[in-house]
Amino acid sequence: MKRGISCFLALLMTFMLFVPSFAAGESNVVYPTLYLEGQGFPLYTEDLKHIYSLDVDWISYITQGDNIKTLLTDVALMNYDKYAEDLYDIIAPVYEEVILDENGEASDGSGIRWNDYGYAVYSKRNPAGKCYQFVVLADNLPVTRGSFPVYRAHYDWRLSPVVLAEDVRGAIDTILARTGAKKVNLVSRCLGTNIASAYMAKYGDEGKVNECVFYASSIDGIGLANAIFTGDITIDAQSLDSFVQYYISVPGNEALLGDDSTTQLVAAILTLLYNVKQLGYGMSVIQALVNSIQKIALPKIMKACYGTFPSYWSMVSVDSVQKGIDFIYSTEEEKETYAGIIEKINEYYDLQVKFDETFTAQHNNGVAYYSVISKYSFPLIPLSSDAREESDIFVSTNKMSLGATCADSNGKLSDSYIASVENPKYVSADKKIDASTCLFPERTWFVKGLEHKAFPDCVNDLILAICKSNGTMTIETDERFTQFLQYEGTGTSDNATGKVTPILTMDDTTDTTQGYTKNNPFKALFNFLTKLFRMLTNLFKK
Image (cartoon, rainbow, N blue to C red; front, side, top):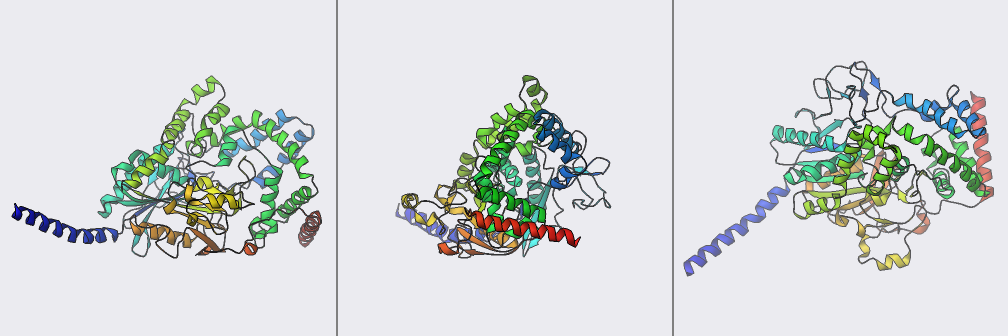
């Protein structure tokens, strides 16, 4: 008996000695990464003609030829039915080569084009190759950051995330077979997060993903998508003013509007109207026009463009999707005609309602580790009911972070609310964010001052640290990457350069993103005259 006990203890001690070495070895494993970025890859027809790629200059397009004259005449005569028809006739031709069929599929053969080496063809001068929905670069062609291989995936951004999830599964299997790795890291941004989520909901339990990182996520929906797909576009004077003021009143932000003096002048006019108490009246008139257009034209327009893309439907919130289906496909006949699209929409939302439960279970059971990177300090595009919320201009921070409690974009969390938070470490120093209500509060980061379309290397460094940690990275692991970070740099798109620094304390007087809505008609008038003079000067220079 004693000998048996002794042997058992000896085996137990031996096992315990080896456990740390196994754990340490596993934590040092460098897994390959599959990266799913957002929508917008160029599309081609079967005969290799380059078609619409989300780069239309709508201001120039609407104002060219007789377009603007026709629309203004319709408004002046208050002929909203004709306005709706004319607007459709202007917009629909832009999308006629890119819309999907009634089943949400590219039946015309359009899609991504690839050459023999797996590179996306971005030039009409090099249109060789075959069309695939989804292709992974060959194993000797990854983008590497040090010793960290990253495989960049391209996909037809119109298709259903559930359909693309199957392709993600095949891509992961291909990478594992080529590299011999046991798992991959799955990093996604914007629309790519919806595809990654669909994959994790359907196949995540297969255990092939180590770290799943959502960056600027849209999986909880986007207010603007809700508004457009449900016919609930709302223009609020205060939200519009906050949006405009942010770009012309906060030091350094005016450049974000561009050098177009006309745009600058329009912004100044809106500000002047708001400050002399006339913007609200003007918005009520515009809202009446919008309401008429929504009811008459929007369903028809949506069926000629984004309403045929299951991927764009995935950016509608769970609680708004049925309202959207009933709005876009309002009759039983239309529901029957577009049954294929509706089936794909519902297939995704059947998964989405279980996302929180699915992700939490996978994370807690060590099947896959989840991390979320969000952005804030910008007012939302002022076209939806949530326009006053904190955001990155395009997605509200609450939805992007999977549940953070946020102050309005022009306010702060109240002292009484902050006092009620059980652990104050989750409250940002600028009193804008409470991360304790996030789905993964210990693994959710917030970057202040970085708008939606900007993805600088300094944030990629955070993603790299997360992926290399193999489940051990939290908001307290690395002093470079605390939960709340300030972006300091230049550029507002993929070429943005700069750094992120921890926000540990905040002097209210230096927080320039707060209090940017002013009620000063004299300052607004001066600003308007300045913009007008600049525009006239530029005209004379020409």
